Length: 378
Ligand code: SF4
Image 1: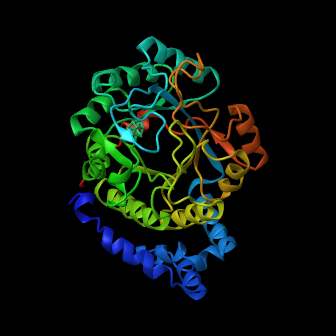
Image 2 (image 1 turned 60 degrees about the horizontal axis):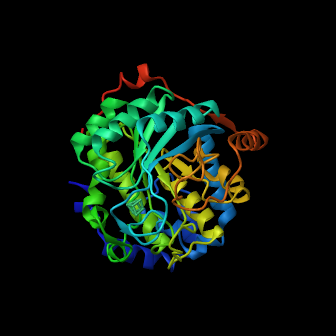
């Protein structure tokens, strides 16, 4: 059974409604058990739990230190292209927007990867818009292989693909795939995805399983906060991650909580998420998914990022650019969205150390991971 076949949006909505009536005593009970069912997780998302943020944060922090220690993996996005055939209303790369378009040549990809390696990065996320002509599977395989010559960990955040494509990228050296559902709300999804291949909600929902089946060992899931009810998104995300754990048990899951930032097109989120709600969400997800990586991007301002670290964050981007070529030749192409935390990598590293965290650039050996068979549906 795929997640798309099992996910019940109506039942998830009812769960959210019930959670609105949770009392403090229900939140305390949910915090007091190691077995965090979806019903209990919903309780942690309730307004009552929002009044008990210190207790949530303490539990989330303890679980994180127990599983991950006080470490923080650092990565940087490398944008390959901003040419897109899709119309996503929240995105600065959306088709038809008047920005300068560019797809990096392979030698430009190498220059960008070199610039990041020179800054100390060993973990690079290759990001691209969707364009079947400019960004085809063979091009992406070459980008992965070229980047892999310079940094040991390479992941892809690109258009949804089929299993053979993921297998070819894994063969080229791809360690991870990030694919946000953007919104799990099937009624909201078509309002924001108005054209291009990305408009197919179910197709996207099934895709992470294809990547896992192809041998991709790290999967990144996420919902773009601001498009729909954040409590609904959180419940769906946790259900999705648990489904993948069940059917792809050797796959490491990472969860992201990107909030919508300003971009070309001036999109305003229908359901903005406050800082306090973001704190509650991250703490609750850490409690529900103690083994998952939690990723925080430079979309959030530096002060807030520093405050969110102890709640359960295990990976952070730093010194990022969201335009193709932005590290070696900034200003030649349009950016996807504006960044809030513009600190260079060294400043983030220094702040992490001040907070008692050890920045980590590489925490595995290919020789070890290659001994572990990838198994999905096992
Ligand atoms: S979100 Fe992705 S697919 Fe949609 S417009 Fe932006 S780059 Fe294109």
